[in-house]
Length: 362
Ligand SMILES: Cc1cc2nc3c(=O)[nH]c(=O)nc-3n(C[C@H](O)[C@H](O)[C@H](O)COP(=O)(O)OP(=O)(O)OC[C@H]3O[C@@H](n4cnc5c(N)ncnc54)[C@H](O)[C@@H]3O)c2cc1C
Image (cartoon, rainbow, N blue to C red; front, side):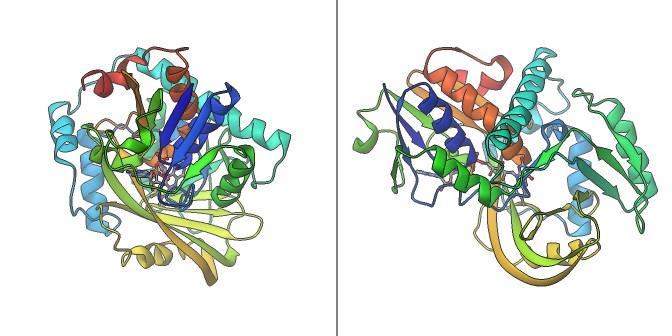
């Protein structure tokens, strides 16, 4: 069987990996370097930090972020907005949480297993601190945790200079840059073609048995599904972090993750599909509460592909498989999204219920 994977972000690479393990002949198409639109990420493997998007609480949070300058709203996909509003505050079916918990476990285990084989990507299972500037926000965060369908373990911890933090000991983190290098070693032998596939009808892909779309927010250019981009920035810096573990300042929307050879700083949740990165530095300033920066090594930008309800979109229509939409958790769910897409191709699964709804209705 010959399979074309369009898009070599983290989801495309994991899809290629699991298909390769099944002995499938895979070709990856992407005009950009593999992983180059995924490496900006903080590398927090935090699938239990899932956010539903189609809720009034989330809209209120976005408006608060807008007032604080953490978010800017320039443009959104119209189909995405319509779906969000039509489904506002609608509860998903209970069964979807079983699928999400299974995907979360699969993904956390996958990185652990890669690291047990060879930890060449700064894998650390040292948890995540969500830090609050304001005591009311911390108390609200704790109330929300009690309703979290993933039921994660957590502890309240004091952090000097802040109102406090919620620590999630079961989460892990990695260096995204090093993990992409590791994936490229794992995928030796797979054909990478440096071209953009601008239509599903073009001759370059007509001889393949299956086409897998792992094209992030750009998927909307190829097929009619409701995805909108939320842009953000990732810096690799040298400096002196005040904490030696991964932390997110909740009100500022910035994350820092001290790694072996640099510190990763990420931020930004802009509804904006442009390549303008002029807002990136704002997040360095916000992060200065947690690190004294000596110098910047590199800055990358990326676009979180968000579905209207926050759930990934994974499904199959004829010979087309789609796996995208995990928004701010693409790395956290990447292994499962790749495996589930691979299972659709090889016929091991037919459908993922609620996660397949937008593909089934194409
Ligand atoms: C600031 C920031 C921090 C983040 N931190 C984290 C984190 O700590 N943990 C976490 O889990 N997630 C994090 N995320 C989210 C994560 O980065 C995304 O969910 C993830 O990158 C999405 O991966 P993807 O493979 O679906 O899409 P992308 O990474 O966007 O890759 C899509 C690929 O498709 C290619 N493509 C597009 N169109 C075509 C075409 N027509 N033909 C061929 N190729 C095409 C693109 O060139 C690109 O390489 C963060 C995001 C941001 C912005």
